[in-house]
Image (cartoon, rainbow, N blue to C red; front, side, top):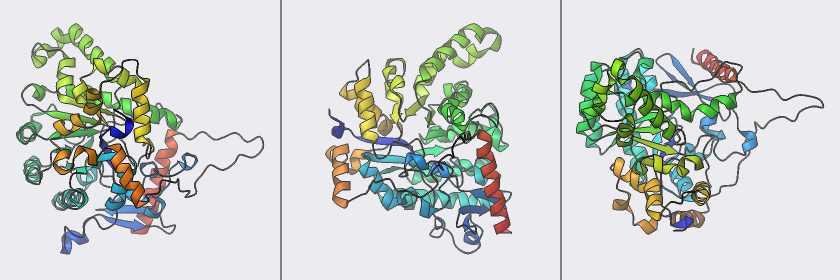
Length: 448
């Protein structure tokens, strides 16, 4: 196999939604009360909904900018590459990046629909959540059949409504939902509470994957507000371990064939995580009574059976694939976030494969790049395309014929040159929180 022969499916990408996402799915009062995109005096975008103000987050949409301009911009659609919010331009950007298909998480309402959970009027929130799902499935994903894996969000504050929405989504052909890895952050019972029993049954009955995306529930740890922000960014993928340990100890895993995808998690930490889980279980299972929960199995066995993990750039993790379940590892592009390697994903991925001490076979490469995702998410890429139509080489040839431009676009915001003797100011984790607070305050003034 050569680089251009690969077929790549990304199991984690994102959309920064445009202002018209509800207009084709609601009318009257339901449309009038739906989330709205607003603009401040500087033209910066923000969203309002039921008294909440949601600022635009820059690092979620810096794709296509020079690295020197990465920061907390952009803050409006005009400052973003069009593929961030336009599905037609998105497919062009997938082609030029050699990505055959993609699972997309939303932004404005949260990866898990968390903003709907925070809304005071839950009846309206349910109407709008369903409309959001309809836009995502019927408008965004359906625009290019076979290029997207639909992923719904759920009104988990109402279990009856949640079960009904699972059934409704399943009828639309949806095989994945995104939920909060720690629902106690939403004021709901923990996953170990009987509240969730109807959910486990409905998810299992409809064979759906539960996507647990970092950042929705358990916060990525950082030592203090003075911690340099790169320290925080460094540990973000590994913060998935907190939720993974919690879900690994879920008793329902032993009663239902539940499928969990740790979205944007990385894989290098996973072998040690499983080793540590097995060791802890062996030392403490008697007094913690976890032996009754695991029923004679090692935690690592349960993890390998139920949890899919994914990576962006992880040579160490790939070199230790033998310690993972190679049938449960997938690739993610993370377009348009700051970690994305667009438009050079194939080059980075192929280079990683060539660097490994333990060389992968073509079969293993196929599993990691697309076959595992197709099986786990019940997504049949080859129902829509012949393999030779969606290889890296074929997609890039199509992008070249259309003239898709990948030249980095300067939008301003680059670091200012330092004066003589001036020391660079360290950007801290606290700066991020202050930025959120500032944009929210501006938005509230505008909304009022």
